[in-house]
Image (cartoon, rainbow, N blue to C red):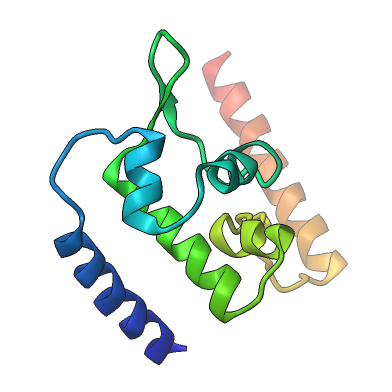
Length: 133
């Protein structure tokens, strides 16, 4: 598994060098950079729920460099690993495992000891009450 992440890091480094430096890209520019048709990008956004580009007031899509890296990763998963949209969504957006609340466990005390301890505490409280009165 570590080999996979090492390859991914190298892949991202090469990709970052190839992408021109801009804050945002239009869908046409992203299509040319990634080699993914515009209708496929729209499909991944609408049906696959994989992409969430920001939009201008005119509703034109604006892609960030991180979006382009995500598109290249989706493209790789689709072509190399032959994953479906659902499988890609699961892999790219793993659900956090709910953390179970672990309550501290104390070794069970014998019933007689608990009862005698509570009785001793009660006796001390009654004695303090008498002193205060």
